[in-house]
Each structure stands twice: as structure tokens, then as C-alpha cells.
Image (tube, rainbow over all chains, first blue to last red; front, side, top):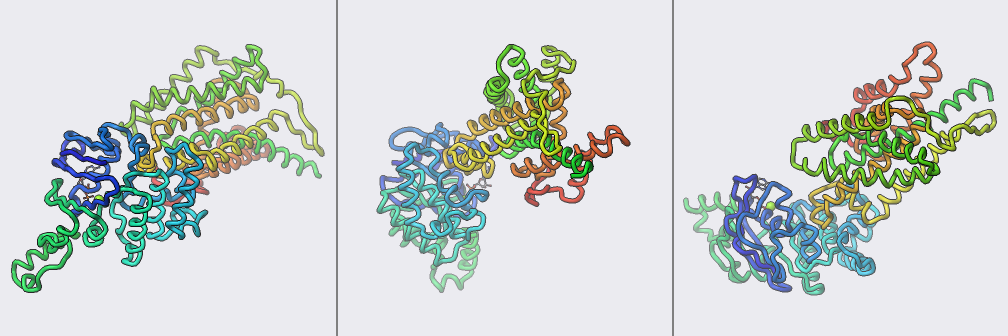
Length: 264
Length: 296
Ligand SMILES: Nc1ncnc2c1ncn2[C@@H]1O[C@H](COP(=O)(O)OP(=O)(O)O)[C@@H](O)[C@H]1O
Ligand SMILES: [Mg+2]
């Protein structure tokens, strides 16, 4: 349903950050997009949801298709209406608003108030914590609750494709598991496709069916999750499982340094 | 009540009446600043234009309250047009350039109004002005009562709008975090335009009643300069702050005028600025502002 076709993105008319990226998300599929810091993952998501050009960026080459139609020149509100919603990096809840107001703002593009009310209930089912803190100002929520709120807010737009930018960042492993369990339920119960950007490669590849790996604005590897999990380079650089012997050697030290760069 | 107490209460009540109008002016100013980060230095002129339009309508024979309603709608469109034609082309330009544009607009509006309406004082021919109401020794003018009533009403309407309407919520979202609001499918362009429209509409109402309380001439736009201390006192980004700030400045100013103006003529008009200096020295983020607010 989403086809990103060889896109190039330039910031401030000079810095090329994406140098020809292609990826695809099929109906109902979960896809992971992995890569080190500054690889261009966030930029890819921003390009898809149309806010790039409001942040000094420009799509200079390539095309983005959603459900067979080009959305490369669409405004962000049109893209949300078509069914793509992003849970941004760092959660970005509306700190001055309370929980339920944050959720309602997620339904801004919708006209069916009854449907939105049902979805509000649905979000509260998925995230009972949010129901408990209904009237609380979002800034007072814990990190995990803010992430839940950001996901719930995106669900309020009834997306066909949910994009998440590093949802596990800064959360305890228990919470990460809880959130991914709920995402898995959302994917199977609501038939929502998911495009997930993660630094935590293991969690992401266990969750996704297909993975892409990017580096320095280019795709370097892609494939079904199982095969990526078996891939030696991926194991070494992303999953941190390499042969003990090798790690003791000189090359291993170098690799370790490289791995740190990947994971930083 | 003793005569002194009555005098004091009298001053406080007219202070609240004038202050509620300052509060409206401040509210309109804060609305734009909060949503768009622009300090609109033509806010006083928007107010003045509103007052003149209403004056022209009343002179043309339209009943006062109808004229107020029509002016509010006209001012709203005027605000929308200002955003579309003058501010939107400035998106992405440096803050300084945007400020200069609003100053340019203020000079333009003042000159045009001067050409059309002249520079002399006008008495607003409204049906409210002459009567007074005597209550337990207090003399209340209907103009003051109307000013309080209308400001109170506007504040309540705005509160309801921001709290319960979809568009009001979107506007708060944009004020809070513009990028994320955009991600949620809110058209930030449209919200900006609406903000200018609403701001000008409130400014017009404030202008009309100020012209009733005082006199109507070009200099009425200087009241916006008094709203500025009110805004700073309230905390620049806070709507409740703007309202409280406006009321405080109004009351203080009237008290100073009532007790000190005979001995020190003109001291009344200084009050607001003394407050401004004190606030900037003691509590620069204002009564309701957040500490980390960045000052321009
Ligand atoms: N608004 C921007 N203006 C200029 N450069 C940017 C902007 N946003 C990101 N970049 C640069 O683009 C590169 C990729 O960033 P990003 O997409 O955020 O990477 P990732 O999400 O993979 O960490 C980085 O080098 C970053 O400095
Ligand atoms: Mg990123």
C-alpha cells in the first residue's frame, strides 16, 4: 500500500540526507526500518507524511505512492486524511493539554464524531493507564504513558498505516515489551499496517515481518526479518552477538568500535 | 459607608471597567503571540479601525448593538485579510522583518484613518453614554457596566470555544507544538488565519467600548501600549494572565489617577509603565508565565 520510490531529500538546498531510498509496506504488514543515528530514518518518515518541506527539507527526486496515488506533493493534513499517521520521535505529546484533549486532537481530521468516540474507547481499552489519567495534563505523565498517549493519539485518526519513530527510546525493557504487545494487537485486530523505525534492532526484527537497514542515507540491506536475524553483519553490528573469539582479536576491537557507532 | 470608602469603591469599579477593556486588548495580542510567535504592533490600530467602523455604522443610523455585531464580523474579515496578504508572505523571514511589517501596517492604518475620519475628537453617539445608575451611593455609568458585561461575555465565549470546540482545541495544539499539530492533520495556515481574525474581532470590540468610555480619535490606538504592560504582567503567553493583567493595570491606573492626579498631573498614564518596569525587574516571566519563556 505504501511505495517509496528512490527518493532523494535535501535540507536547506545543500545537504543531501537521503540518496535514493526505496521501501515498500504491504497491506497489514509490519515493516522495520533500522539504522544508526543520523542515517536518515526520521527524515524518511517526515518525507512520507509531508511535513518535510515545512522543516527546510525538499524532496528533490523520486516519488511516494500510497494506495496507488502519488502523495509526494500532498499537504500533511491530506495525508492524514488518506490514512497515514506518524508517532513522532520523542513522543511529542501536547504538554499543555490533558490526556483526553490530546486524543481528541488526534481525531482532528475526522467528521464522524460517533466513530471517533468509539475509537476513544478503543484506545482506552488498549491503554488502560490512559483511562486512569484521563483528565491529567500530558506533561505530568511518565515516559511510558506519554508514548502510549502518542500512539493512542495517532490511532484516533484511524490510520491504515501507522508509522512509529523510535517508540522504545528511553523506556525500561518491561514497558517496551508492553508497548510492542499492544502494537501487535493493534496490527492484527485493526488490520493497521505498521512502519517502525528503531535503534533497538532485536525488538524491531522480532516484531516485524520485513526489515530495511539504512546507512548514510542509503539502503544497505533488506529482507524478511528471519533472514536478517540470521545475517552475520546484522548480528554483529546491530544485535551485538558476535563470536567471542573474534571479539578478542584486534579486528574484534575495531568491530566493537564500529558497533558502538552503529548503536550510539 | 464613609465618603472615602465610596470614593475608593467608585474608583475600583471604573478601574475594573476600563481594565476589562485592557484585558480584551491584551487577550487579542496574546492570542496572536501564542499561536504564531508574532508580536503584532498593529494591534492598537486594529482596535482603532474597529472603533471607527462602528462609529461610521452608528452615524449611518444602525442601532448601536447591531453596529457592534457587524463591526465584529467586519473586523474578523479584516484580520483574515491581513494575515493572508501581509503576514503569510512573510513566513520564513526573520522575526525582525515580521515585526517591521506590523509596525508598517500600524502606521499605514493610522494614516488612512486620519485621512478618512480626521484627527479631531469624536463623541460616540451611542444610546448608552449619558445615563447613570445610582446604587447605595455608588454612581455607575451604563457605559462602564456595558464594558464589563461585554468583556465578561467575550471572555466566557472564548473560554468555551477553546475548551470545547474542535477548532479551539486545534488552535491550542498549534500554540503548544506547531510541528506535531501539523502531524495530526491540522492545517496550521488555516489556524494562523483564524487567529488573526479572532484577534482583530476582539480588538474591535475593545476599541468600540474604549471609544465609549473615553473619546474616539486616532490616539485611541495608544491604549494598546498600555495593554503591553498588562501582557507582560500576565506572562506574555498566558490568556488568563492577559485578563488578570488588564484588570490590575486598569484598577491601579484609575486609583493613581483618582488620588494623585491633582498633585501630580499626568502620573496616571505612567502607572502602567511603572508596573512594567517592576515586573521586568522582579518577575520577568509574569504572574502566569512559565519561567523558561524566551524573551524577544
Ligand atoms: N531540519 C534539518 N535541517 C538540516 N539537517 C537535518 C535536519 N534534520 C535532520 N538533518 C540531518 O539529516 C541527517 C539525518 O537525520 P535523521 O533523519 O534525523 O536521522 P535518524 O533519524 O536516522 O537519526 C542528520 O545528519 C541530520 O543532522
Ligand atoms: Mg531519528
